[in-house]
Image (tube, rainbow, N blue to C red; front, side, top):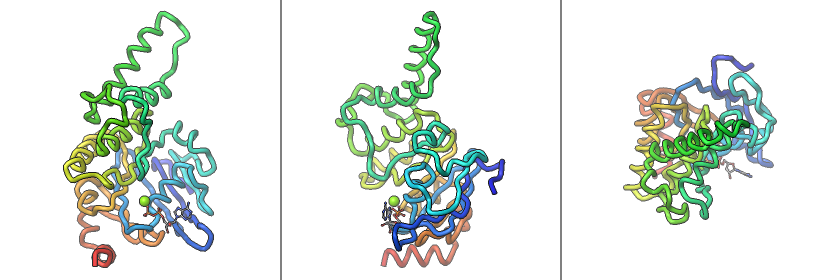
Length: 251
Ligand SMILES: Nc1ncnc2c1ncn2[C@@H]1O[C@H](COP(=O)(O)OP(=O)(O)O)[C@@H](O)[C@H]1O
Ligand SMILES: [Mg+2]
């Protein structure tokens, strides 16, 4: 059953790929303005959870609700319009577009175009201002006219985050935004995520436990498709099963 007070909710979601169960009966709820972390070893099902939430994959069973409305069988495009926006583990940008253009596209897609020509000029100015605000928010204002392909890898990841928030989502889903990025650029990305975390609802998938412990209010631990722990940074860092899984992974 969906509860009206939850912003996003998965109810007993299972995802099987042939004989492999990538998600096993996952019930997950998130409220407005929460900053949530999802951690777990490689192959735990983290990206698959995002894929079923955003409609890229249809779950084998279970249901997904956004503000109490079932979205399980809707297309990714419609789900995005309803307010879910994501980044991908592998970077997804338009190399031939500038930073400004890449963000403008999303801002424009959300704007209501006036039919009255007198207000059209205001409308265009408004789009431009919103686009610049987002460039500023993610720290790319100085690089607004750069082609996306000319950005460093870390800045491309930041641009992807800017593109994701350009549609003004109710929930922002970030899939390992620091993966493959140098330590210095990792700090830049985390700074952007931290800034956004003060303004919107976020679900952050991260491989690094330190990062989620620092940024997130509640952390969910997935292992082999199952939620094995959920709690505050303090609870999670003290959880013995979580410690065992993470230490086991390193050794
Ligand atoms: N489209 C797919 N087809 C088949 N198997 C998949 C697919 N996507 C993910 N898997 C498998 O599901 C499991 C969970 O993957 P994934 O969600 O990517 O894990 P994580 O993001 O936690 O590393 C893995 O064993 C992976 O190989
Ligand atoms: Mg993944």
